[in-house]
Each structure stands twice: as structure tokens, then as C-alpha cells.
Image 1 (cartoon, rainbow, N blue to C red):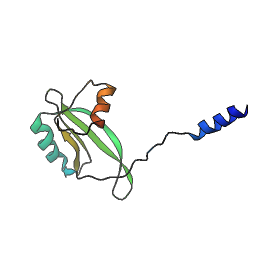
Image 2: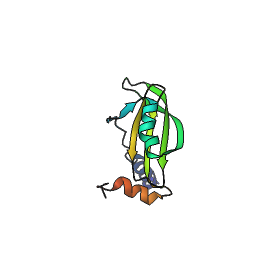
Image 3: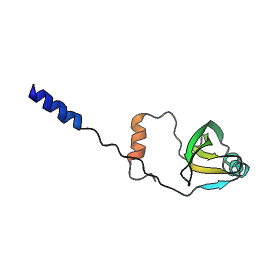
Image 4: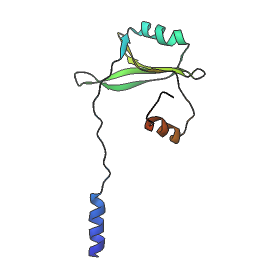
Length: 118
């Protein structure tokens, strides 16, 4: 009985380490919504794939609802992820190697590889 109690206490104390996200910043490109859409979406023939409202932390540490949209052309692999409001639309991510219909192993390979240039 003591062994079971000791094993239970030991196993209860063993919890997986969970890293807390750290706040980082990166440069983003912002312009009016029309300028951003013309430059990235219209010029590249992208179509909207989804829209949503995200909870975004501002530089003042406030959380504000912000519109987001993801535009893509699956045939060419081009995409852009934007967020913003009526005054500014910012490019969060832009690229040309979009893949659809992938599985978990492909996702893990993408994020765990050392070099994305290939």
C-alpha cells in the first residue's frame, strides 16, 4: 500500500513542462486597406479563403478585436494574411509556397526543419 501511495505521489508530481509563450515583435507592412488589397491581393490574383475577428494585443498591452483575412491562390501557392481596420491593414504573413490538404506529419516537418529555403 505504501508503494502505491509513493508511486501515486511521484507520478502526480511529474507533470510535463509547458513553455509559456513569449511576446515578440516583428516588422509588419501597413497601409490603407485599399492600398494593401491592390498591392497584394489584386496584383497577385488572390481570392479570399477566410475572414475572422482576432483578439490582438496592442503595443499598449490592450486586447482589441481586429479583422483578419487570408487570401490565396492554391494553384500558384501565393498567399497573404492581413489584419486591420478601416484605417490600416497590416500584412502579417506573405508567401508563395501554400500547401492544402496536408497531414499532421507534414505540419510537424515544416515547423521542425532547420532550413525553409529548400
